[in-house]
Image 1 (cartoon, rainbow over the protein chains, first blue to last red):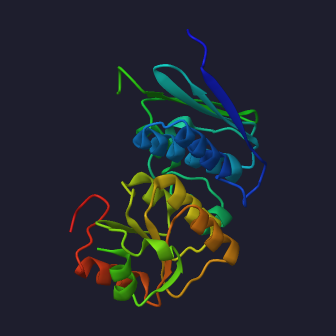
Image 2: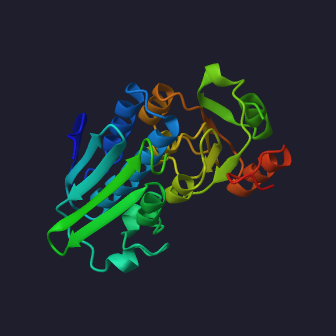
Length: 146
Length: 117
């Protein structure tokens, strides 16, 4: 596998509600500066943002990693939070374990993970209780998935 | 619909985006749930919400929303207005409820995010 032509890591701080979402916007601005396709930028930004909110919402800290290859882009979000008890349920539209505080901020509709899956070409999720979660999304920029 | 027409239809106050009064809008979406906007095709649409928090602005930035209308006279703090200004997102504050604001824009021809009337 060819090495990424660009790799960038954006930190997501623990319980930092004020800056939650900033990592995704920084990633979005980076892609914009590289003249990436606006539709691709939007899809990546939405996935990053939903993922980042999940990390902050569930009390973990972690990072958002963007890797750019010739034919694809990889976005992964890794955290050391409590992990997901039942991934199948978490992937259901409308299922949420968000706190009241986050619901008041407009989150917790249970659309985060389904939205991330919908906005990526490939979606992988791994989680271990008390250890954390890793979500990896791939976007094809040429060939498969266009 | 031009931004200036939206401003007039909603008797709204313009908080940011003075240079964008001629910006054209075809679709609108209203929600206090950020994922609803993130899940829809919100690009260049009007986003009506009662939530005047930093996450409303970030949701707009991420999803490419063209303008935000805060209903029920809500006004976000000054630093958020400045953030929207930097991101080129016009902010409006309307005295009307979410229901009435939506009705006024729908009546003037705006469609939903998916194009339905």
